[in-house]
Length: 208
Image: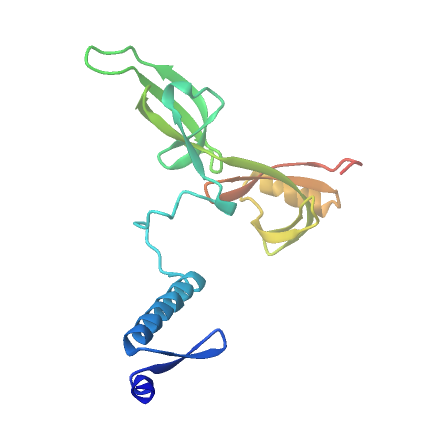
């Protein structure tokens, strides 16, 4: 009987020990081990091909997962605030509200100036609907150098970036003139919706 039992059992190593188990049990154990191995592989090596249909992905986010825009009811927007018009981040310069019609809502007419290009955009939206408001960041950097049209900028933390062009505008000319004159200057950089641009320049003070 003992020999027959051994012939119908298989040797399996578990936690460093050898044990004899029936073939059916052996198969079940191997199946569970295989499933655990696949699960571990999937966790360590997730799929890297993603599409916009993937529910867990948010293609409106910017750095560090921060949202590039936030929704806001149109009636809550104010002049000198910001809004996305025709897909561009704009500063609101004019607003007017039409009277409510018999079969509709009051509509808000807005005129905005692109914060990067200064181009004018207009749009109209029902006052109860939401519009996107851009998340805008403004930082100041010390100008260290200008090479081939790119600025070398140092932040407060000492990190240096060299990926921002001198603006092709009067501001850009002012930056180049002040740098050529040997002035210590700070460049203000605006960032929104994946874009960045220098928007102002000023003289450094003793505390900077």
